Structures are given as C-alpha cells and as structure tokens.
Image 1 (cartoon, rainbow, N blue to C red):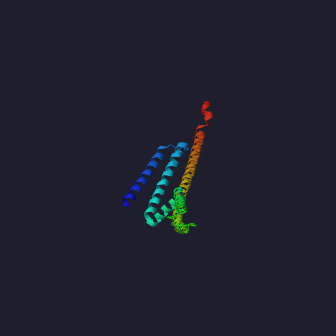
Image 2 (cartoon, rainbow, N blue to C red):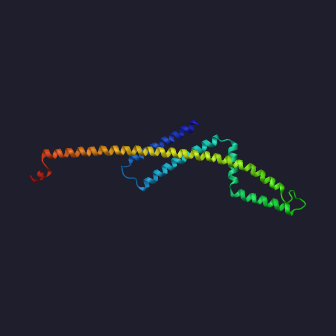
Image 3 (spheres, rainbow, N blue to C red):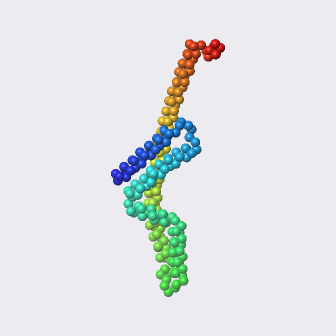
Length: 197
C-alpha cells in the first residue's frame, strides 16, 4: 500500500515538474490550438487517473455480494439475457405442449409462473442494490469533478490577479519611463531643437 502511495506521489511530482518545465520553455504568448489540445489532454489524463484510482479503491472496499449484484444487474440488463431467457421460455412451453408423456408443467404453466415470480422477486432487489452502488459512484465522480473544476477556477482567478498586478506594475514602469524621458527632454531641450542644431 505504501509503495503504491510512493509511486503515485512520484508520478504526481514528475507530472508537475514536466508541466513547469514546459511552461518555463514557452514564451508568453496566447495559446494556439495545439497547445490547448495538449493542455486538455493532460487534464483529461489527470481526471482518468483519479477516476481509475477511485474505482480501484471502491472495488477494494466492496464486498463480494455487492460485486455479485453488479454482475447480475449487468447481465440482467443485456441483450444476451433477453435472448437466453426468451429461448428458455420458448423451450419450456414447447416441451410442455409437444412432448405429452414427459410433461412437467401442464398448461396454463403454473410452475413457469412460479419460476418467473421468484426470479422477479430476487432480481428486483439485486438491481436496486447495483443501482445504489452506481449512484454512490456517480456521486463520488461528481464531487471529484466539482473539486477539480473548483481548483481550476481558483487557479484561474489567481493567475488573473497576478496578470492584473503585472499589468499595473508595467503601467507604473511605463509611466515612470515616460516621465523620465520627458524630464530628459526638458533638461536637454526638445528633440526637435536638438535636430535643428
């Protein structure tokens, strides 16, 4: 467990170093579409890794009945189930209609009705258990998405504040340079006067 945490920390640190190196190499320019695509891919990769980690953690915490419920619900909601179940029903009814000496459930198929009722009675709670687990996973993912978006928004606001401060400092510097240039011009004469002499 601690080895996995160390590996994840190294990966996280390596990712941060890579990002810082790339940003330091880039000049201050507006992002082009290729750069935006790379940033988007990095963010999506980061989200995928977090999601995979959360799913693994949830699988470790889940008990075997929960996983069984998920598998049953997955199979019960598939076309394979519909096809196999339809074949079973057709075979059951055909056998009991055609093979007269070996019938085990005469029409109106009371035993089949009991079987279907029992199946429904067990299948419904299993599907509900699986849906509850899926709802918990969805909630966890939405909290994660909110956290990532919130963090990104905070970073955007921080970057905007820094840019505003830099712009104010640049405006002050430009103002001082212009003021100093005007002082030099008045002390040494205007540039037009210097050009005439």
